[in-house]
Length: 105
Length: 155
Image (cartoon, rainbow over all chains, first blue to last red):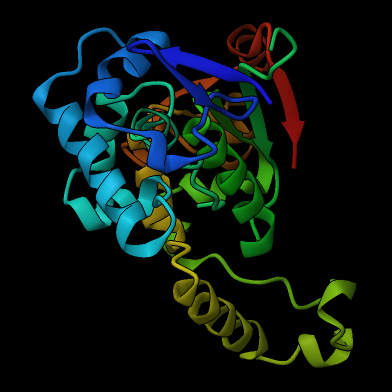
């Protein structure tokens, strides 16, 4: 199984870089994952999305897809794509250390 | 990951509900994956972005073997409307948005919506007849230009 190293921690990840064990995640790792994903420094709005994804995962066992994320967080889809141009739900889930959201819509 | 899909251009050529949804779902799903997406509406697919028609797309109940409904029955007045509202309700339960909301959502994801010039000429449509989310009416050549380097999917 592939691994990634964030903040000197060795993390088990899948082929796309998603944590296979979300309990390995801490907030300190998020900035490094974001950098590795090509995002640069996380701003406050991006942090809000990442924390929201994490909270949703902890409540429901899965991260929401983009539409559900927009509905539940109140952040418009347009803004979500400005914050995460390479796929908001997907990238935020990766940074939040949770599995890739599944869903076609 | 070098052979990962990075751009898709999806042609929607049919104006029935079941003719339009798959292309919209594929474009929206592409954007969610971080893949660039363009939608090109041609022929009766233009109904999906025509201000006059986009709210009234219907399931095709004649000549649609997948429905398992005899065409004679499907041709009766009201059958298409009933089945359309049946599917719309079912999709609503699955949180699949109605066409107008879906188009707005896809436009918000940054995907490009385009009308086909030859079809617009054929039906006498101008940019004023199309939804505000439509970026432009383009020729086939321009479509290939926009699609360069990506996958083209015809629906």
